[in-house]
Length: 191
Image (cartoon, rainbow, N blue to C red; front, top):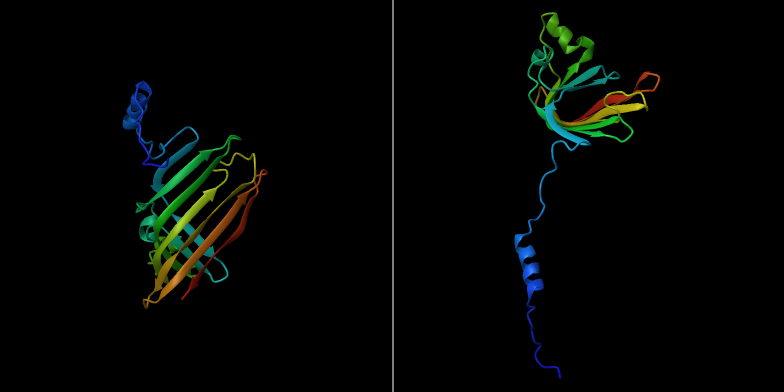
């Protein structure tokens, strides 16, 4: 009754067809296209600045001011993605895994102003940060309130080599009536 199970292979055109399909099938594993009509991905340079008015500091992400103030040195590529929404506005996100950042005393003047006056801005801290930017209406269609901003985290060192945690944020808004608002902006350095 319960003897050894018997195996009976399937035979015929159906079996041959199934085997042929299995042997020739390709697994669909591919990166999405750079542009698909709705989503566009590309690489571009990124620079960002954060102001901490309370402490009178400015953090500049990107090339040093000696280059950046003149539009030079922007060679750290970031990954951008834009999505065309059904309603029309373009939503954008950018990621930069390692962007140079320098923190300056803003009470001495903006670093670009110091350079234009013949001086050399001396950073209080230097380091790198990871940055994410987002914008819910990149081209400011005025069909909605445009909310956009960035968040960065990383590590900086002071002139004595002390390592400190860096965290920054900015959230801005443009209303349908074209009113510009700074909702929140600042950064912290924790040593």
